[in-house]
Image (tube, rainbow, N blue to C red; front, top):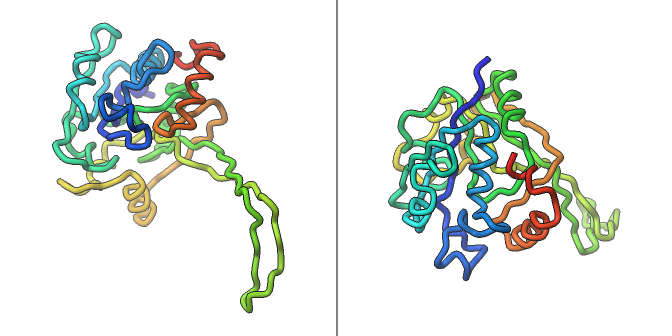
Length: 239
């Protein structure tokens, strides 16, 4: 069974949640320790056998291109796909030429110790069109939650409940056939694509991951990532 050798990194967003920093710096270049977050991600991909990387750019793309160039300094092959207007998270995939039959797609602002090779292996072994990497997220409601009957009688009161959800990590493994499901020249997000595939009874799988995952585009996660990268063994984020 062939391993996945290609990854698309979505790096075109404006990073509005991290303003004012991202008014002059694209979100994937935000520093974690001594590296931009995107460099950590690329090094991790390389160390998992994925050396052909396509960076989908938009906002402040010239800075990303100036920093990474063709990827030679990191030992990978990087090419770029540029969107002239915002196209969501799935729309930019339609612009990319010469995709492999199987490839990874991910946001460019993630800090994780996920094994991309194990994730890829799971996707290929299950022969799914699309595999979504999932993380269990606990959401706490800092209020008292009321449950009512149909006639508005209070039948339960739950003080500050916690709920568990399986959330998307923004990391996907895809069969090239998925691209045909994305409309041309249209703003289209990955959740739209997933819902369309569910409605079409396409083959979708979820991959459970219980390690470290942070969405650096959120200020709370970014601050946590800074602390974690300094206190933990850095190698697990790079390998």
